[in-house]
Length: 73
Figure 1 (cartoon, rainbow, N blue to C red):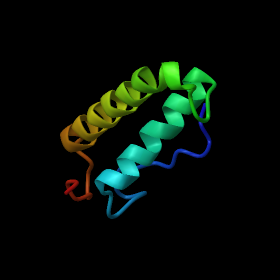
Figure 2: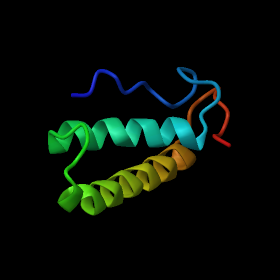
Figure 3: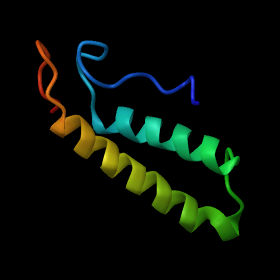
């Protein structure tokens, strides 16, 4: 779906920080919404979606058990 979103789990990514997660969330919300930058009346909803996707992504990465990988953080 979003080819610009890279895999964030080991062994594909050795070090993932909050900026990496936020960038992936932003790309996802841009793709789903169809907006690169939302109009002012949609900015709050767009920003909220990015925050929610970033939080869910961080939870997912923290919960994954990858053989031979290291935990995030």
